[in-house]
Structure formats: C-alpha cells, structure tokens
Image 1 (cartoon, rainbow, N blue to C red):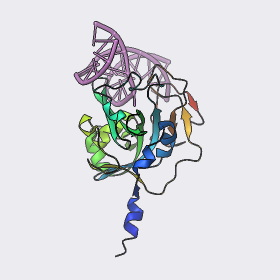
Image 2 (image 1 turned 180 degrees about the vertical axis):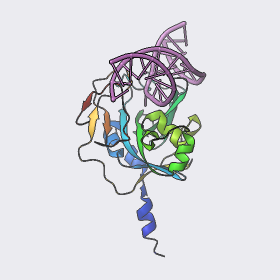
Image 3 (image 1 turned 135 degrees about the vertical axis):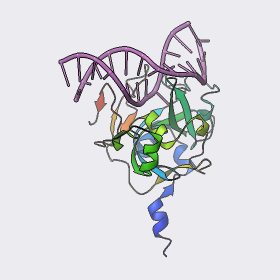
Image 4 (image 1 turned 30 degrees about the vertical axis):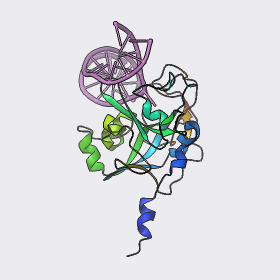
Length: 210
DNA sequence: CTTTGGATCGTCT
DNA sequence: GACGATCCAAAGG
C-alpha cells in the first residue's frame, strides 16, 4: 500500500497561522475548504466576516463578555453561540489572542457522511437543505455550545478544517451580511458562485453574482 | 413559486 | 425586559 494516496485524499489541516489574520482576509479563503468531523465532511460554500470593536454587527463590538470570550482567544478555534432561543451558529476565530475577529460558517455542500447528517436533521428530504444556513450547518455537524472553543487546528474535539486541494473561487460572489441591523453596507458575505447549497436569504442584495 | 409569522431562551441593558 | 449573525410550516399567488 502506498501511503501517498491517503494524505492526498484527506488533505491537510489548516495551520494556526492561516487564522491569525483579519477575518475579512481569511473568510473568502475558507471557501471550498472542508469542515470535517468524524464520519462527516462538508465543503464550506458560504461565509461572513465579523470584526471587533470597529464592527457594529459583531458580538465583540461591546467588548469581552462571557458569551463571546472564545472570540478573544486563540485563532483557529470554534466560537459557537446560541441564538433565537433555539439555534447555534459556528465561527472560526481569527487574529492573534486578545483581538476578536471571526468568520461565520454559513453553509456547507455535504461531501461525506450524508447519512449521519440526515439523521441529525430529521425530516429533511433534499440534501441541499442539510447545511444551507448557519444553524442548519451546526445541526448537520452536531455542533452545540458544548463545541464552543473546539480547536480546529489540533482537532481537540474531532472537528477540523481541511484543505483537500480545491482552491477558493478566483472571484467569489459577495453581498452584505445577512440578518444584522448595523453595518449592513459592508460586503463581508462571500459564497461560491452558483453553488446550490448557499443559504437562500429573504432579501437578495447580491453583488457579484446570483 | 414567494411571503409571513410563530417558536423559544440566553444574554446584556 | 427586549431582542437576536435563524428556521420552518403554512398560507397566498
């Protein structure tokens, strides 16, 4: 058996340094990377960047609290928050420790472990609806507040982000961020043009495509 | 196909 | 005490 085929197929885990930059820079580069957990894997097809004290829409805008503490910690960890009384959303933490920025993971194209994802999202018949939204993504991957702080680099909780060789789109589509009240003009949402797993927002302020 | 409203609770004011 | 970085079912065209 050749061992060369294995790492090539599984890809390389993204290093800490990848995340230790501004979220606006990191976000579009996360497109087409794989979010992996045990038997499941999904390709990241939609993201949003959130900054800190200068971004009115960010959870970190008003400084450190118990909820957003992970955002201020090491880069490359998962910041998970609870919202609307029933949903979880997951972010990849950016910038060196002490500075709060993060990339919201908004949608995945399911790649493997589809059976597990379907189990985690009972009643979903169309696979394009398994992870086509930030809370759906968390459901499909079994991410809750228990996974807050999970290290995506070391895989402390078994969750990793992997580069399997598929590059980000040369020209990603972009628009304003979804579901926020402030700073809606900033074009900090990016997605893979044409991908059917991108979330369908009520408004379509799309710039770039689709 | 599109639009609307209900669900539901942790967090910060 | 108000309000979400949302989702889904149901109703309407």
